[in-house]
Length: 318
Image (tube, rainbow, N blue to C red; front, side):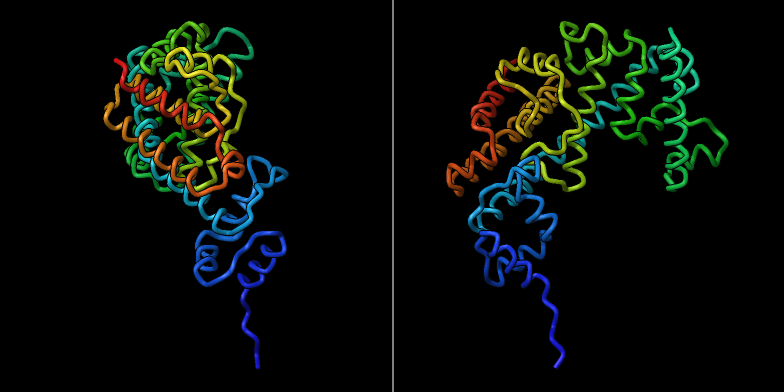
C-alpha cells in the first residue's frame, strides 16, 4: 500500500528532538497555518539566528507568535496613516517652495546643486523617480497610466503617492535645507539636533522599516526589521520631546515611541494615540503573564512596560 506523505509530522518530530515539546492536532494545525519557516524558524531566535530563544514547548512559541501578530495588528493602521501624512505634508511644502507641481521644476529649483557630488546625486534622484514611474506604468497604476496615456506630465502629488517611503527619503535628502527644515518643523523635529536638515530622511527611513515589516507580515518583536543603526541625534530628539530616557531605537518599543512622537506632533487625535498605547500595554502584560520571566526577558526589553506607561503620559500633555 502506498504510504501517505505527512511532512509536518516529520517536522514536529524534528522539533521534539530540538527540545521543543509539541504534539496533537491543534498544535500541528497552528504550525501549518503559521508555517514552519515563517513561524517556527522565524520566531526561534532574537535578532540573529545565533541568539536562540530557549523555548521548552510549542505553546511558549505560540504565545510569542500571537503577541507579534497583535503588535502588527495594532500598528498597521497608524503606520499607514502616518505614511499618508508624511507624503501629503512633504508634497505640500515642496510645491509651495517651487510654486509648481511639476517634477521638472522641483528638479531645477528645489534640489541641492552646489558641487559635483550634489549634482551627481541630484541626477540619480531624477533617474530613480523616472524609473519608479515607468515601473508603476508597467504595473498598470491607474494614476500613472492616466497621465501618460493623456500625454500629460505626472504632478508631484501623484509621483509621491506612487513612491515608497524609501524613495521619498531619497528625494527629501536631495532637497535644499530650507525645504527640509519646513517639512521637519511640521513633523515636530526641532532644529536643535537637525541643523543641516539631514535627520529628516533618517526619520522617514526608520518609519519605513517598521511600516514594511508590518505590511508584509515579517517578524517585528525583536526589531530585526531595521535596516540601519539610528543616529544618537535621532534618539536625543525623541528623548527631549517625550521625556522618556534610554531611547536607543534598537527595539520595536522604541520605534513605536517614534511613531507616536511623530503622530502627536502631527496632531493626530489623542484618543486614538492613547488607545494604541493602551492596547500595546495590554498585549505586553498578557505575554508577561503567560511566559516564564527568564523567557519573557528574551522576548521583550526589561524597560518596555515602563516606557509605554511614560508614553501615555506624554500623549496626555498639551
